[in-house]
Length: 81
Image (tube, rainbow, N blue to C red; front, top):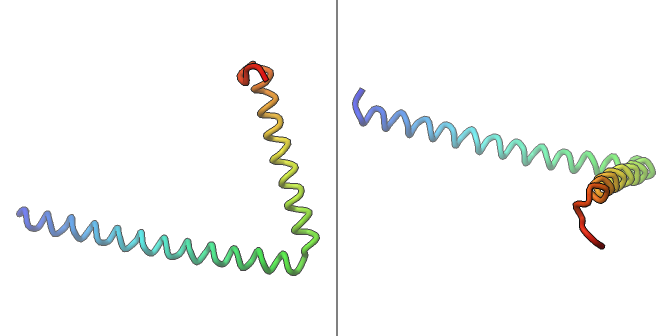
């Protein structure tokens, strides 16, 4: 193979990869938009369920962070207060 052929093959491969990456990014952007629209639709249909789900998620995150902080405090990683 000549140098020109190898360069052409490399350029074609790079161009194909860029095209695939652009397609993937475009598809993910559409998926995010659809997810946002779906979430808005579900909140409109069942607002109490959405608020209670957010509340429960917040409680779970707070308990997890509290447990993490408590473990670090017990090991003495925070130092003096």
